[in-house]
Image 1 (spheres, rainbow, N blue to C red):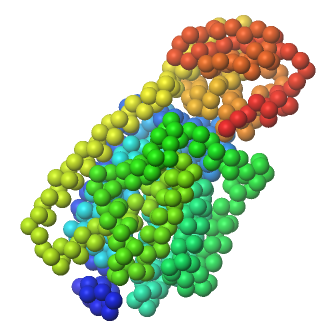
Image 2 (spheres, rainbow, N blue to C red; image 1 turned 90 degrees about the horizontal axis):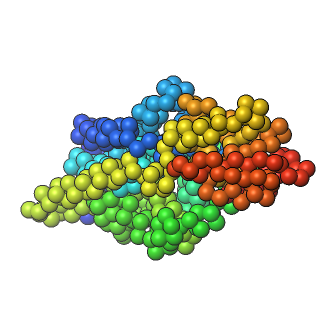
Length: 493
């Protein structure tokens, strides 16, 4: 049994202990989400960022990369080692992370005082997010980011609740530091989250968290865990900082520019989720019951404004959906408790619509890679291998494959496990910072639409394959340049 006390600022009873988690329906919803995502894993082949993670982890494992830290490539490499060539095995960690989002959203609702019904509704909202449905089974940094951000949010929410009861558990702050360090090894955007949280806490509290020794101990743990990838960035000229301009330049194509980003940052929460998100944001701002958690509302508004102004990716806010939606669903619970309504059943048709929309996005995910005009890894590697094996044996020993983009390079490397290919290179993005071709290479098979650099560096350039992606043979090296000298000039983000 949970006792309750009265907040003098609010007529609503605040529980000294949260209601128990209604485990079987919450875990059933999470299990259904996992099963649905696993069912779609055999279809559509590798997603473009997913195959990049796999190639980076298997063939170029390092302490850091141009555009992300090393944790997700390491996960992809581990799954590739355990079950080579299996999409199902590769995607199991991503699916588990997506299912965990459902559970954490329910746990956040519980921390806010949500009863069994509120917990189930929160889990349903977490399960039917549109962005989650679209990418929830792909092994990418932005698939793991939501569960990591929600884990950080849950630790803070629980610490604040216990502090308000006069018995703070500062060990939660140490665990916050551990999880923050791990998150820094998955995606750098968490640093922006931390800056926004700090500003918000200074503005609206609880400021006493900054006076807790274990908080700073957690910060120290996070710094130690993040140090290797930060050193990699420093030694390579902080290329991650240059990615902001790249993201902004791609925004009109991927999300419709700033206006599209402004809409998508909310709508990606899903049919139910977007509604709960707006209700929860208002409630975190205005409700006396949630006064101690107001810093989450300020953080959300700050990040929303920043991401719109910078034309960032439209999914950058997804890691905060769960905590804000949980506040929204408990707000509806309070309304139900104070003014019972005969219309409570209307939630279920809306949730059914939200589930249908998420299901459609899940089905659509199987067609994402072809939509970007990229062939499967196997078909691209087969075409490149045909061009390579058609060369005289002596020439093959002096030929490398260079692709136009990091996506094609990753497809070739992963697909090349089943086909005869030489080493694969690309001057694009992360591949541009991998080792350049060796100096014995004097001819190149270029995979891409237009070998402009090939025409400048080689006397003869001719197309040898006209398949899904053109393949060109570049021979007759001109000048006295070496690959070590040339590569830094060729690479681009």
